[in-house]
Image 1 (cartoon, rainbow, N blue to C red):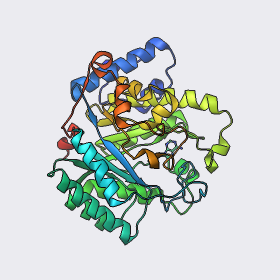
Image 2: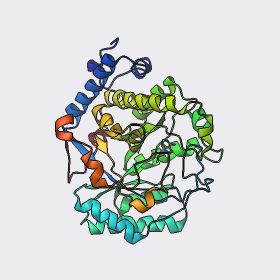
Image 3: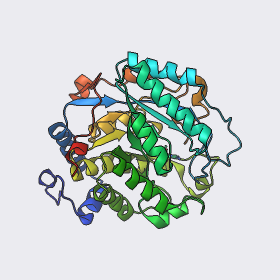
Length: 357
Ligand code: 5AD
């Protein structure tokens, strides 16, 4: 290895990041993942934290070129779960000691939607005696809405920048979407006091290793608390899929790159929460586990009711329809293989957040 990664924690240049992302040799990759994993243990703890995610509606006003639930995709059934169904799932998450819930849906900005979310936050706080930590992943909203949801008790927000390269961002979104607006949302969320999570897709058509290194530096620059990033995965009913020449090569490349991104990020910012995302599992049966071995410390089991999962396919092969959260768990033998255990009943906040000035 040309760089002393063990002594580079918190401090990698763009060239060093590119070097890591270009690694191919098994021995070097092993060293990279081992270093990242050790840094997680040293800076956080041995525990893996859970966020049960409920994807409560696929109705979306956005038209992102990569996403299966984009507005123009007329081949899917649009659904919204009822309040009762969502609260039932939230109750399951609470009873199973996950401690944290993520509410995600397609993006909507109308008052009916905003009020619906207001009620959900209140009622989830109620049913859990204020104990469930609430993370929102509901896209771009105005400051007033973000503020309101924060006051009602949501304390983390996920909004991926998708790519920190504005040109690439513009290539994968229609002109009506604005890179500046998205950046501004991230700033507002931080100002309000949320723990802020962002992320990118890895291996997009036209994306270079330099872009990915810059994405990692971008996370550091905006001082994020959490990152969820995963491989770009094809969805055939989207315009971006048409740009892919060889799907097989894409899958292998993007999976490998995603693991390297996780490890490099753990070295660059050791004390943030990094999720082993669902998209990893779409490309490899033990994808999330390998993400954890490469330095991630969060998993987000999908709690969305099996009836709705087939209509929430952002990309192909997204968590197998009908697999329960409990089944998903059996896949991990955390104690033996990872020398780690699940941090039940703990929010598992990112230590980074508490060091903010
Ligand atoms: N491949 C991988 N990730 C995707 N997302 C949406 N579509 C895809 C895809 N085809 C991710 C985006 C979004 C998150 C909710 O899902 O990064 O922010």
